[in-house]
Length: 181
Image (cartoon, rainbow, N blue to C red; front, side, top):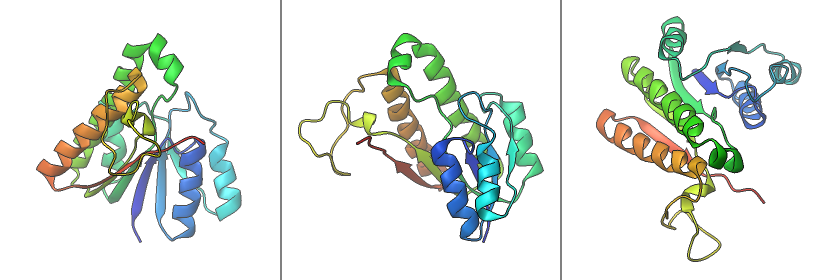
């Protein structure tokens, strides 16, 4: 099928996505520095799928370490980028930490996408990009408003970076906007 790199692969959504990918015939590698996840998640993936998934314990904000993953795996067909800080409250207390982590990791990945001619990119965004919408429920056609937190701002900026990158490079990109119940 192809090789997919999943960032944040040791997190809840990342590990469940890996299970689905493996069960559908994809080869998967994970990148997760385990700063906000648990490395044991991949053991659970192996128990479920019968396949061991390699995890690179790398901080995606470090370009050289990120680039090395791609040098070792030149056959990556697509990336699903879940890795990010995600606490709205913490982002208000530590905005620079959120801008640094969430945007630099994304930019480093996109530099590798460009260098290694990867054509597919999925970005884990958030419903926070809608800001305070005029009406509820929001749909895909609802416009965005100013973010109400630094976390939301990083997701808005990330979406714009990806849109411009995809337009200039011809990369196929999907932006996922999650909602909590």
